[in-house]
Length: 321
Image 1: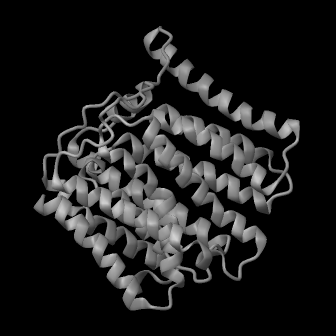
Image 2 (image 1 turned 135 degrees about the vertical axis):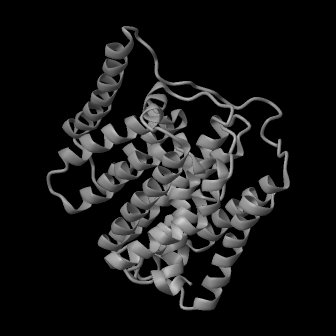
């Protein structure tokens, strides 16, 4: 199956769209209860624009597809993989689809669009002499992501560090990044004030509570958690292979997803509220790393088996649990 995605052409992205529809097709016909969690005002306003549940499911597919395209273009244009393919986007889509709650316009799905755009600007800055627009855009996108999904406030830290991995920023560069952050804050707070006439924080901060970390109510939670732990272990194990015979600049770019994974794990711990779906924030970095490794892996059979393990887990979670 993965042979359809081992090239990077427009037709392969259309195949990828079909793949995403197939693995999420069942979600169009099941009633998925909404997670009992607080959401930000910005996310609530976005959700009000969607008329019905079918459009919600459809938009979730299209958003994941767009995010997968952004990831594939980033990996291939910057030669993070020795082989051009759409596999990084495929693995991202598969990991994010493991939990049924992401069938709807979950805050994580919408926020991921801006999170990915933020890191795209970091990597793109390596090709630019004047990176002021990249700094501003990254600050803007990371802040919007955090206003949609509160835990992503943590991602401002690896976003800031990411620029320093490649370049030493001058004070004016730091100011440009901060300007992007402040601009997003002004726009969002201003929009809220115009629509309601009140001042509101727009975020809900929740931290870990004793006894919640090990609460796993159903077998599907074990399957979901196990697959994500397997993905994390595999990406860590593959680090030497991913960086082998690649120049220093490319190695630094590959280390960015590892940096995101670290802060994503910290985010899950700090903001854990007994909703296992929060682990889905790891889908972006882990999917990228596994996709790169799968594209480079000479053993096609092992790659197919690894893919089938996750595909089987997804079928169990969606259909059998």
